[in-house]
Image 1: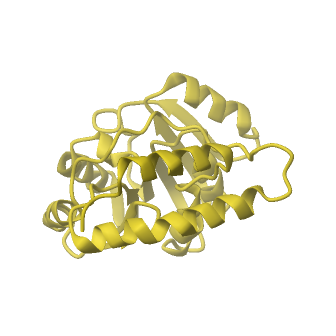
Image 2: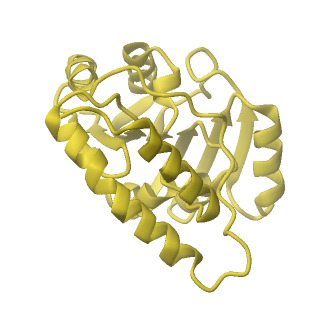
Image 3: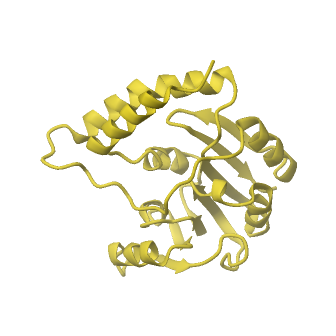
Length: 218
């Protein structure tokens, strides 16, 4: 199976612009289901305007969000109540991770901007024993299964965008994140490298051009 024609992708982009919704936030509730009901310290890597970090704060004693974009980080601070146990800092995800250990580390739509195995190694190093790492990432379609999932996501994407914006006078705002570049690694490459760094990691292709990875440190 070949990739989607360029004109189909252009039509999809136009529809998404008119009916925007957040593909990453779609997985936030799934992320929470992978985590304990209560935990101590959490770290959200690539935190953007902080939606996931604030959601983690409903279960955590302390949440730190890091992002490399100063403007987006400033916006996250503005959107966060002082009473919420969340802080945001501008930091490099490889060399400036806040001192751990952390009971939970999350990373959504960010790791494909980083050297993959090196990033997972850094996350593992900052995760507490028994802690949980959850990644939602992008991959480059290669196999027939990849392309079938992509094709299946098109009508679902359109339906979801229409439903989420139905009856609204203006499009619902989408959380700000740094500009996303296309993913370079295939799912097979991601799974192979992840299981070398994180033995026992669970990976799965998902709809809306995403995959998920979860791992609990022994």
